[in-house]
Image 1 (cartoon, rainbow, N blue to C red):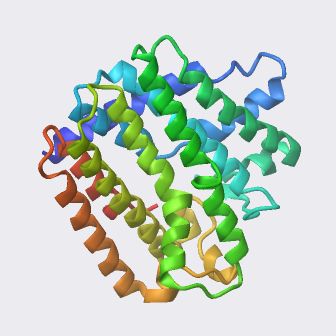
Image 2 (cartoon, rainbow, N blue to C red):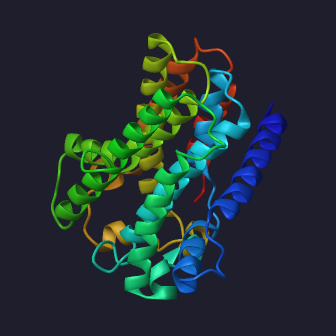
Image 3 (spheres, helix red, strand yellow):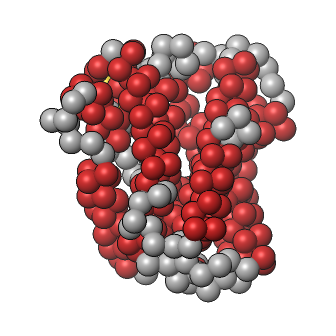
Length: 296
């Protein structure tokens, strides 16, 4: 089964890389520097967890790979834009992302800001793409879900809470709410968009996917906090120990590494239990395992 999953994952990752390369503007086109910055931000590596979740959710509802690819690219472009903006000096002020200079280090702050803006708008343009041959009502649902996941009650709101919490001690419920918004909202949207590419999800399946998304989204962040505290910058591909240096509350600072790992294990079990009744959900289960076992 592991070999089958690895083959499936590699094939989907290669497909999403090719599609992103096709959808991003040609770097030779004016404004060339902006287009180079956009491609630097998107095509600089990454595990493509969110697109993989979209593909796996689509399988539950019989979605074609072609349709999911367009929606998955839209989600990944929003994720890439968020990383560009999060790394800016006015936000987390980071200089390394996926083992390479962050966008503002490579291209300057102004160009990085515009690159993030352009990636965000391109994401929503893709949801009108002819390759996404699904009903208009489903497209509108996708636009609504991705907008909500990206905005003040989603990813941007979570980042605002994170910035406001820097240097302060916050309690576990506040930390969880921050990460439900900052990390979990886009992970949930990835799953929802993938599902909408297939047959209309029925209420029980939608609820199961939402429970799965909630659990894997939080597990992803718990593991991220553990890795930040225990992994080197070289292995992590971004600056390690940054949370501690900025005096941020994390699952590790509030619970300790052992209890944080126990929480992640419990969330993993919740995710698997949520999708157990669903057909064709093995790859969702495999991705929950992957999130738990990742090293960067």
